[in-house]
Image (cartoon, rainbow, N blue to C red; front, side, top):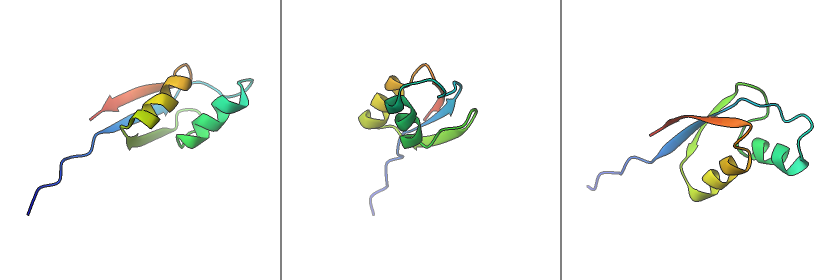
Length: 66
């Protein structure tokens, strides 16, 4: 039986407020599962997620990468 490769994940935390930010940035935070300050989410490390993080990089920080 083949062993499953461990999936890479990335943990992000919201450090900035979406107040007075463009709607697309607020929607991106919601798409990442964030929306309130200091909320953390662990997501699959995919190019799509990386692009979303890049779009709101001033509002989030990467806590850890596995």
